[in-house]
Length: 288
Image 1 (cartoon, rainbow, N blue to C red):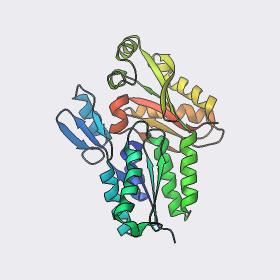
Image 2: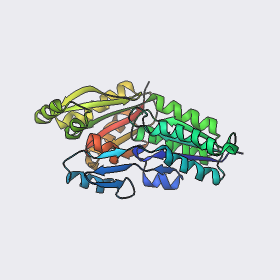
Image 3: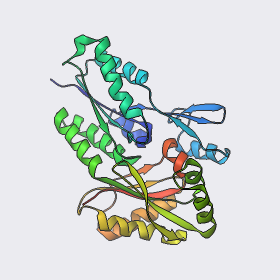
Image 4: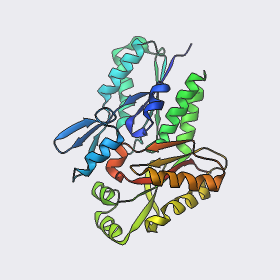
């Protein structure tokens, strides 16, 4: 009989409540700001991290999870009697975390050959950031509780991340410019002119879908883009940062347009905020 464990990383931005109530294990990324190092979700919550960002002039740096960390995790799961562990992890093209999880499993089996066939690791490349794959981890954990088997859970997670899209707007281009997501000169000009890029993340890539002049049009444009690409009747989520008011505006606009509300809300943590800044808003949905 299968004994299944779901784990993810802190860039998935799942809530502490879901982490605890659904028994999802979390790999917490290290965050460096100047000469100080922190562990995300351990040394601070999101609000405390936003405050830290306000006192730091540089760009916080995130560290990938190492193969050694995964080996230690796999040994723990093996000792606890798990037969299948499913890791739903950050976009492999934005972090080596996913590849390190695969390497670690190979090394683990070399160290513990008796585990071959008895202990299986299923790594799912999230292909995206934040709740785009965080939702897959949450739903996977619900499926474990419902008695679904490994094959069904992995198939669901892979299908979701392969068809998931985020549209979001960073209200300040300071962080995107410094991190290289947007050329620094363009970011400076954009901020001065009040131009906001509507960013699209899907299939491992971050692109600028269009631009919006002025903050008042942000929610409307994201709603329009989402409706044009979203598969009818499917769940959607709201992603946001340090501004609950704009989160509520986004949810209200989407609810009015679709006739039903968001399945969940994902507040960006350190890994995403370091590149996008603390104030963002957007939607997460399944494309047609």
